[in-house]
Length: 165
Length: 160
Image (spheres, chains in turn cyan, purple):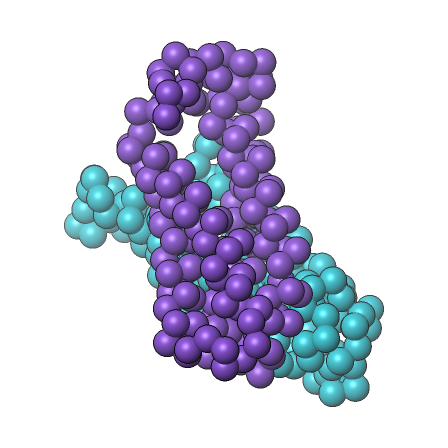
């Protein structure tokens, strides 16, 4: 079964129809998706601003990461679940939307950026933990995270406008 | 309040700015995106301090210092949200006039902003131990609840 027929099948399942045709469920899932943005992206942005050297100065980077990222991760899980449900309610429409495709690629890139950060410069965080302005590699990770996640939010919002479809 | 009537909202919608946003294909979506990004930042700035007051998150940092460090971001994000919000409002003022979530949101926004700039700021920046721990935690819960109300009802303007 190719991806297109799989999405066709998915769209015809009871759950997908139920969300799509409900009056309350769809808005509630969407609201959850948007509100968890504050929890997830809000806290990630606080870490990014610290990495860039313009926010939470004086708070050790390792402390910001250790104390805020678990909560951000919790937000990410809620976002992913609500996002998956939104996709489930109309897989074909989403999959064919250019903004949705760009959004998925950008989410992947944020993952690569975070992974590289934690595997490289963050491993040596002890040597620059309290620097008001972290080293270039850390600042770059902060900028990239902010830009990519902003792109994800913008694509997610633009998806609803159905331009270019 | 006498200035809240349909005629005034119709006038607002007919202003040059309201018309420009409404008639443009891309202006509203772009403003909306900025509104969402500012909302994320606002959420982060609010949560970092409220979590601290609740004894979670950056709990090793003194609350007053943390509050001062985050305050410019909170104000910046709030102002950006308000400016972009006004632009979107102008483009559909009459729809907002008839939308219950819009009025819930405005009420929650006024309460949340007033609370953040007065009582919560006082609690968050006062010396540790001067205010009872229960009251500190209650302040954080009220703050999160009010901002939650703003964002939640804001999203529902699109639905009702």
